[in-house]
Length: 262
Ligand SMILES: *[C@@H]1O[C@H](CO)[C@@H](O)[C@H](O)[C@H]1NC(C)=O
Ligand SMILES: *[C@@H]1O[C@H](CO)[C@@H](O)[C@H](O)[C@H]1NC(C)=O
Image (cartoon, rainbow, N blue to C red; front, side, top):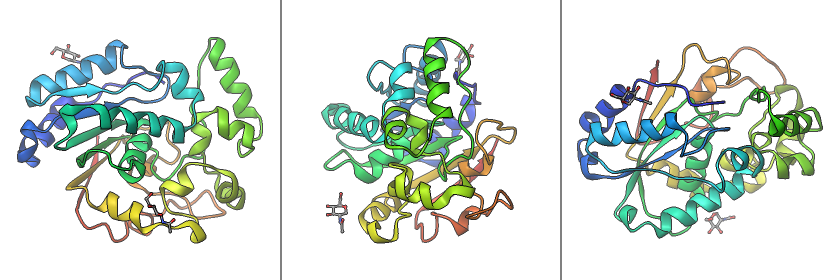
């Protein structure tokens, strides 16, 4: 899923005017699946956002980029980003995260799980599968897509697929919730969905964000349902209706949450 263009002016406005203190705060960009920091789209996005906002911006790569974005489990991807941000002196006073699609889950993982990492101030999420997705992103063609497609066709909640296909960490089939809760290794933990493993520290850390901006693409065909970008999702056991976000994880969120449609 290559980079999709987003109105950069809008995000710049957010960074500059709505978060006035963020002018000097650096930001990191976490790209989506199948993308990499060296690709023109995400590279220009980072550069443009940086030059328009006057803040330093860094695209943080996981491993070799495209390949690892598909095949490295999200928990490992999160650990890699956590280690990288800890080593960046530029971020030590705090930073903002701009997440693109799958990159948002890594970003949230960093906010919630990264022990001793620099503080995250604001989080701008563009089309993040925050409440999961009921469909696997289309891979396209090429050798690694053949591998990905074969994994997708296998049992998604098996240990093997969980350990070898990043999106299996947030695939949430409404008709298979018990399996999802039992076997899916990333999202249930990230969203504190497991009653016996709920950890208030994750929620506290997430709620410490000064601002959370959730942007949903109104014509999104990749995220099913598109409202997952706002933490909206299906009820357990059915593919309709889409429950509004306040019924989901944002309950009790204390800082300001903006939801934008573009
Ligand atoms: C970045 O800015 C250039 C020049 O203004 C523009 O042509 C390009 O489309 C922008 N790219 C992105 C990804 O926003
Ligand atoms: C919750 O998470 C924090 C941070 O990772 C950890 O220190 C703590 O032990 C966890 N608490 C429980 C009850 O698992």
